[in-house]
Length: 191
Image 1 (tube, rainbow, N blue to C red):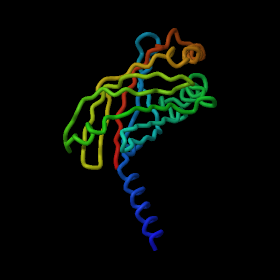
Image 2 (image 1 turned 135 degrees about the horizontal axis):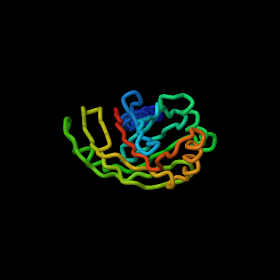
Image 3 (image 1 turned 60 degrees about the vertical axis):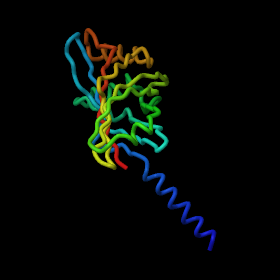
Image 4 (image 1 turned 120 degrees about the vertical axis):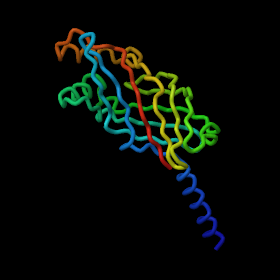
């Protein structure tokens, strides 16, 4: 009998622990980026898929399948997947960071806070740490919104993507494609 009580207690503890985690809600979240071609033609793109979790210890993990890039033009999506991201070799972008759990616990429902959070980006076989300026809003006891306070700039040379940008430029017959790309995001998390 003691064994079953112990198993039940452990199950409850594991269930509570999982429930305490914040899950990124894909349908209410978006990671967008802007490409600039021919010097002044800007276009907004995004990723259709992403998943992430904010654990109760403050560890945040976000994964973006790069096959989900959405530019509004199918052939351009395929070119970005194959020539730029090389998804057969590097299928995902990963972001990890450590969030101050006290800051989250102290955030009252309806309150907003601006914070700088360091995050490690793993993309195309390279890793870079960047500081993300974010706005945290506690919508309810079980809903949190995190959005970029300002875009983060990702440079192609930081992630060994310069040759991919050059291939895209050549195949599209463009005079230029910017190698600096602003990225912004809105993430909705629930628990």
